[in-house]
Structures are given as C-alpha cells and as structure tokens.
Image 1 (cartoon, one colour):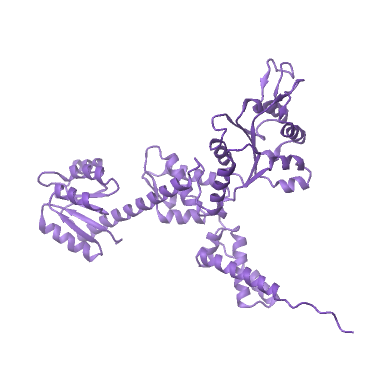
Image 2 (cartoon, helix red, strand yellow):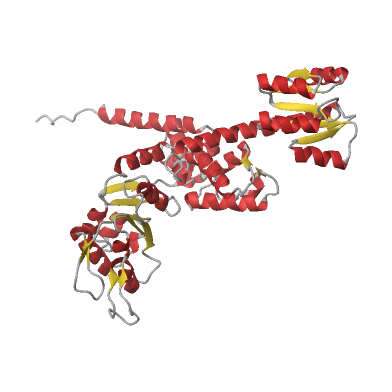
Length: 468
C-alpha cells in the first residue's frame, strides 16, 4: 500500500482502534477523531491524504462532513462507511463528493483496497497539480507551452523580439506549433492591439492569392465589381502571418520580395502604390536550403524573411514537453471535467513517435476524453505504437559488421546504440527503453564517446618528413 497519512472518523472507539492497527501494519500513519466536529478541527491544523469516516454519527453526519472537507481541503479524498448500506445513502455520499463508499461489516482486505485506491487517486491528483503548476510556469507566453531547454530558448527569444518589427521565419515539422509561436510574438509585442492576420499560402490558388495579399481595384479581373484591400493593408500596424511560405509560387515570390524591400504595395490592376506597416512572420515545414539549391525558392526572398530565424524541434526531440503539453491539452478540452493522467499513461506517451507532433498529441487526448467514461485517462484509450516501434536493431547486421571490422566490445555496444537510435528515429526515450538503460545513461555514454573521439584525434602523432 502507498505510504500516507489517514484520519479515521467514527464515534465507535473500538472500531477506530481496530482500523488504526490495521493501517499501521500496512505502513500508514493514522489519527482518530470521535466526531465530525473533531475531524474538522484536526483538518484545520494538518493535512491528511485520506479521510475515512462513518456516515451515521451523533451531531454532524459523514455526508455533512464530506461537504465541509470539500470546502476546507478540496484535494483530500473522503471514503464513507456505514452499517446501513443502501443505494440511497451511496448516491447521497457520492453526490456530496465522497470518493468511495463501503458498508459494515467489511473484510480488512476490502477496506485496505479501498484506502489504497484513494491514496493512489490522491497521489495522481498531486502529480497533476504539479504538472499544472509546471504548465503555468512554462506557458507564461499564452498558449505556448514547453519545459524543454529548446522551448525555454524560444521563450527567451520571443521576449527579446516581440517589441520590434523585424521579419521572422519560423521553421519546423507540421504540428510543432508554428502559428502558436507567431501569435505569441504578436500578442506579447507592441502590435498586440492591432490585427493578427494569418493566411495559408497553399490554401488559395495563386491567381487569387495575389489579390488576397495585395488587394485589387474595381475591374481588375472578371468578377472584381468593387475594389478590395489586401491583407497587407488590412493588417495596418499589426502582423501578417504567411504560413507554408515554402510553397509560394515563383511569380508571387518576386512580388512579395518587392513589397518587403519597398514596404509598399500595388493592388492588382492598380497604378498607385500604398505604404504598408505590417510585420511579416512566415513559416514553413520545408527545408528552404534544399528548396533554394534546387531553384524552387529565391535566395533573396529567404534572406528578407529570415531576419530572425526560429526553429521548433519536433516533439520526439523534446520529450520533456510531453507531460506539460498533455496536461495543457486536457485542460483545454476538459469541458467541465477534471481529467488526469497516471504515470503509466505518461510513460506510454513518452515512448510514442508523434510524427504529427503537438497537434497529434492534442488530437489523441481529445479523442481519449471523448472515449473515457471517467476522469482517469487510461493507456487503452491512447494510440498504440507503430508495428515496428519496439523492434530492436538487426542482430545479424550488427554481428556481420563487428566481424568484418574486428570491433571491440565497447565499439560493439556503441554500434548497437547507434542502430537502436536509427531505428527509433532519434527518440532517446524509446531507445533507452529498448537498450534497458535510462535516458541519462544514454546521454552520458554518448558524451563520453564524443570526448574520447576528440581526444584520439588531438593525440595523433604529427607526421614527419621522410629522411633521404
């Protein structure tokens, strides 16, 4: 049974003594109260992990006590017991806020199991409160959540750049939260009172996208019955977020470059130019270095956009963010419920690849909330790992390589570690689980290897000229 502190409330002193002895044998510290009033006095002076109370007592009943405990110590679970077990009293107890209900006479194992479940619930709620505090501490920038060093660096960078007007380019895989970062920059900066206008560059045909961005005059094309302001002009003093900028067509790239250089626009079909005052934040999941090498993205436009680069690593490279993100997503979709995650569920979440990153994690938790009948989210309602997620490196390939290269035992271990990391896509949490070591040990081994390789390189003898 988990360790904890228990308050036993009953007007029967013999029963209190028997229960105290029972729980002390199981490692619990227990105290006694002979009435609801005495129990409240004790609760006012100290915190208890569980309150076990009779329902039928002189003066304050157990159900009344539950209501008072909920006010005084809302996080403390209460289990009620009575010799008059009935559906009506059970319903009344649960409505009052009791966690569970047992009837007298009861077997010692039954009451022990009930208190054990209450202690586990208390422990889970304490962990979830800790996670909520972590979310509060790490999401000081609105909806942007993270506890990893990478996310803390992004928080710090946003704090430095939010109040200037330099262009920003955000890169990262789909679902990593690029638009959330863009919104955070806007709403924590000097332009927060002005519009934040997002547009997906792939969602609108190129012929219409030009009009959306720069506007058009009446008669500029078929159907242009009135003039229309473009997003650059509508943003007036705010922020224009260009999502999926890597998919912008060549013609529009040239026109966007001109706008960024001159800070003015010319509507489609118009002859006049108009100055603009909009901060541009662009985002892409594409490798723009590769796109530039292959001629699909202009270098000059890249450098105009990439004044302040922000890269968001994929979720698999920052597993520390999974617990706080999960808690934040649960609260976002709770709809009046009080859901919580057990350590088993968190451990399971940490082993999944999350190819869809934070967006996939949010979808999984929203689905679990819809499927679960209780507030406890179970492992069964979480996604299953891919079919090959638990596969270890190929032993045949490993041994053939060792034989061919005459590897030492240390080199063989490092080769196996490399293959497991390769198989898990660089997910160090999953790799450590397969290797049977903790993640810190995996990091230490990798660091020792790097230091040893540097040392061996620096200690190589300097070649001398051959004698003649």
